[in-house]
Length: 178
Image (cartoon, rainbow, N blue to C red):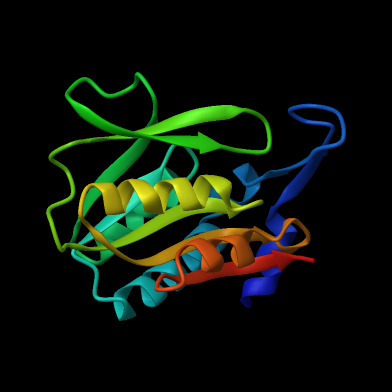
């Protein structure tokens, strides 16, 4: 399989969650064992080269890829959740996206100062959520060394926005919709 073939497992749902949006549904990709394992293997290979100390996944679809990558690298997994979902003391950042203004949180004791962190999500759109996630890792004094995703919506300019905000962070994706 080649990375571009993963597009065969991504369905577009028109006008979801609101009119004018073409939602990229990755459910068929994670349902298909060969496609899912191929995507995880590629993300793991990329992440391994970054020599991370920890993998971080963004709620919620990012968890589907961050957890198996962390397991394959024999690393721990930290999670970025939407505000109000974590039970202990947190650090919070504003996380605007295409649909609304939200907030991301992590427990304040998750990332240790200087830890090399790879952040994973399912999709890069405008880059605003990705930037917020990287900002959060930095607020916790972590060293974000990579941001990876399965899908990039290139026409929204997210990768450029991430690189502008965090030029030191390597940005990676498996498939791109121009």
